[in-house]
Image 1 (cartoon, helix red, strand yellow):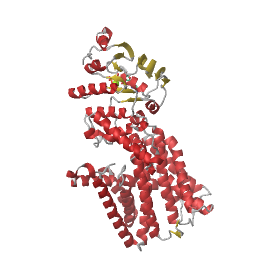
Image 2 (image 1 turned 30 degrees about the vertical axis):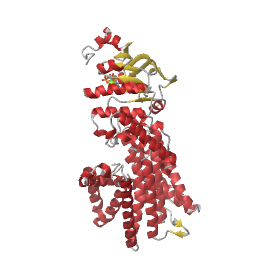
Image 3 (image 1 turned 90 degrees about the vertical axis):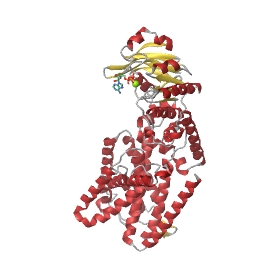
Image 4 (image 1 turned 135 degrees about the horizontal axis):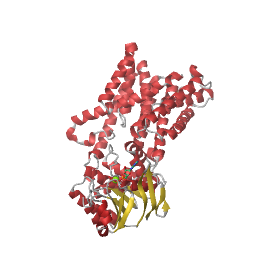
Length: 253
Length: 326
Ligand SMILES: Nc1ncnc2c1ncn2[C@@H]1O[C@H](COP(=O)(O)OP(=O)(O)OP(=O)(O)O)[C@@H](O)[C@H]1O
Ligand SMILES: [Mg+2]
């Protein structure tokens, strides 16, 4: 479904992602781990079009997507969340999710001005779908609050709800558990599984090893931009190179 | 829902009755009628600026350019080519729309201070054009611009022009609300709040930035056309950067990103300007200090202040009464 082939990006002299190649199959939960500064977020930025490749290629559903504008990549079926939360913070929780419906709805300016029956039907459908998603993410009681008033964990879940609203085929989650307490993490694990059971493929960056080992099918490990392992969770845990890369950080941190 | 709807209708009815009473009382107050007509034009223009700055987060310090494009298009078409007023006004909107898109093409790639500079230059360019070009009669301006004919009558009396303007304000405000509470309006606000996230979720940021500019230009262009037909005479002096700054002042003063902000701002700043005339050359100083105070202490303008007061008065009535857009 998603294939990276020798994907590389340099920032000045620093090669943040260095000839990384892997393939994510449909229906997988694919983990990306590695110490701080390993290039995980940069990898996400490459897939979602925020940064452009220096060399290599990224293919999604057999189409080259590197070089496309982010909104085009979103249209092609990839949605993401952000490590340093990127919500529409002054808008309500519900509005945040509604904006996520953008590519799944059509009504333009004229339809809005004349409030055509089709536009009103679409708005009603957006409302229903978004409330359903908020319920799914356990945020329905917060629908009318400004997004910035949510707790850290809630904001992370809202980011997932917004991404889900675009009905992606591939969902990129960048440290969804960061800042969550242990009950929230347990709930999140369940949510990630449920999302996969809906047929959505997931690429997951996460520092919480318990969570990663529990949900992922395959894991790739980055260190200084290079891929040092690509294996099942059990095997990755016992890989000596991985363990030494994490020395100081600690793989079960 | 039913309850709030009834309340809204009741509120609207009360406002209408008050408005009608006020209008009857104002019948012979020529000076006030003139001012109120201007207030209505500013309300439309500033609402347009609000769509751009308040909702899509793009600053413009050159909106006088669109005010001019609307005024001059309608004035030139009617006086030089004999085009009927009712065709000239839509043409004025179209020309402003086109100018909006032309400005937006480079503008949509810029942010903050670069955008501010670009829009200032656009304002200057248009001002230089109309004050030098021979087809706009340079500094002499354009005279004898026909009034707006309506049902076979001309809106010669300021009184009837005002009634017409109030209807136009209502129309443009309804359109604004329709846009804001739609997929397009949400895209604007997404771009204002977080352009990276907006792009990431599939919004074509550049396209919607251009759209916001174009809509905004139509609002201000229409207001410009109204100005031309109301006064019957236009000259470059009306379209200086001071005009652009005034639009922005009204918006910030009233409160941006809200329904009532542009209305409050347009009304108060207009009357403030007039009242302070008595201070002669100290006017600008007092005016400046007053505006500065509001901007410093009321970041959401007067409409934000009203929201705060409302909230503390009706604390236990919940959030239903709170301004949805503030
Ligand atoms: N836009 C940029 N310009 C320059 N350098 C960058 C940029 N983005 C990331 N980097 C650098 O690339 C490297 C990888 O950063 P990245 O954010 O991808 O790491 P990460 O694996 O996500 O780390 P963390 O676990 O802390 O989130 C870092 O050295 C970072 O400083
Ligand atoms: Mg990161």
